[in-house]
Length: 146
Image (tube, helix red, strand yellow):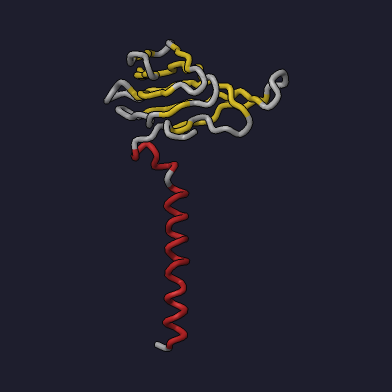
């Protein structure tokens, strides 16, 4: 093998590694429930004419049996309604509570959401979340994000 061929092969290794990493990242959402993360699905997003720069959104949050969200906070107001199953939720300074299908709760902007999980280890659970957000802020932020 010539020096040129060896050099060409060595230069291809980073390219192949980068392609592999991109492929793995692209398949991650499909495997999210296997990693223990909830599945969120957008339902709608609508600008609010009377509150310039703000919009409302609706998403569903699905938990496989035993799944939980990482502790987090929301930049805007959140209204959660349990569609199916049972979800345990706890905000900072409040006791944990299990909400059943048909029950709902409110989270004020910036509240620390310490626990959000499927209360069942055998049945799935699903929430409908309605929220108010400003600009392009994400729906959920890790607790350490400012």
